[in-house]
Amino acid sequence: MARQMKSRRSRKRGRPPKPPQALPTFSLRHLPRVTLPGQSRSGGGKTKLTNRRAAIILYALASGCYRETAAQLAGVTAESLSHWMAWPGQPYEIFQRLVRKAEADLEARMVTALTSKVEVRPELALAILERKFPQRWGRTPPPPPAPVTVDLGTMLQIALDRNESQRRNQPLALPASVNGNAVPRDPRPPRTIESWASTVE
Image (tube, rainbow, N blue to C red; front, side, top):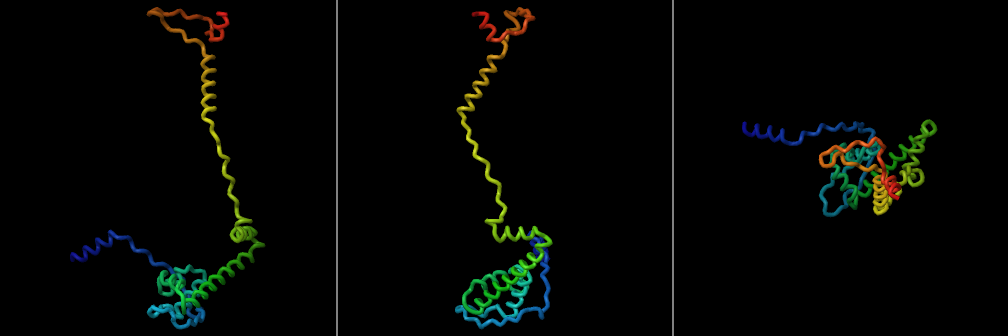
């Protein structure tokens, strides 16, 4: 009972299980005929790369599947397929050539399908040219903005000159009272510093 409780708690705490991946189905009569030579890799045990697994992987790749999906269809891990694509000797070198040929055939079929629809949809031609010749047909990004140089000394001098001009044009501020006595309001408009200077002269 305690073990069951513990297992239930551990299931709740752990990461939820991934949903099963829907893999494409295929018929065995559609598989290509593959005959790989015997293993010549030294220091290795019996290889899992059989003719049947190789045929399933090649058919899946030719159908447009990723290598990881092709490995799952063949019943092996993606790491195993990656090792087969890197190991020297037989049967791996022939298998590597067959894998590259299957992927090249898929690319050729997809390009043919696209180019056959170019007259109906001209934007496909532009998409192909952008990917095939990006240096000539790729979309060039907009040029970067020109660098802005800021002269702080000039900006400070402009601010000081503006402040000085505003201060000179302001009217003189008269006190509201002198020794507690209210200063009578002058009905005339306020004088500026320039007008006071002209009267003194």
